[in-house]
Image (cartoon, rainbow, N blue to C red; front, side, top):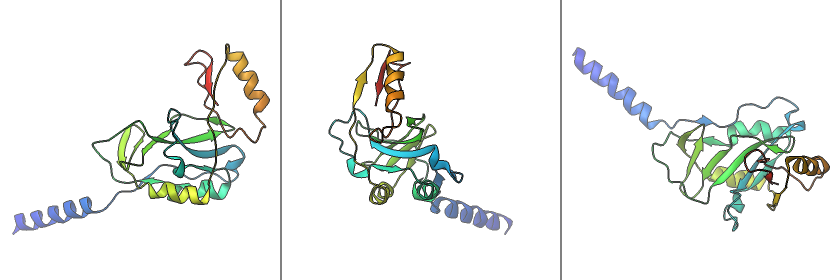
Length: 180
């Protein structure tokens, strides 16, 4: 009888635990007024010239949108295999206009995500809902500078330009080249 109860308890915990989908929050709560300093942008991979994931793009730069991210963008259960390809989608936290690291890498076709160095299942319908509520049209431009000073000058001139949503400053990695 003791073994039967143990087996029954263990089975119940195992079945209930495996059957229940886990929820992995990608963004925690943003404080009130965070949109004065932060935004979040979802974009196709910079090397994806065809921009096949353009229908998922979004740009959130208001407090209500930032607060809703905690419940609007979540990962599913941890996955132990990942199917990356060259058509990934990226979500960046932006401070000022600079994209911060690390980004969140999503593969909408294979419905998975890389977050904090781990793989999770992901419902790409979340991205479609964000795109519908916070659509953005953008273009990518890669600009090469001969010095880091040139890059910093360019960015300071365009810091208040509303046409510049954000930039990824990689001058220290690529000898003066930045993705703007």
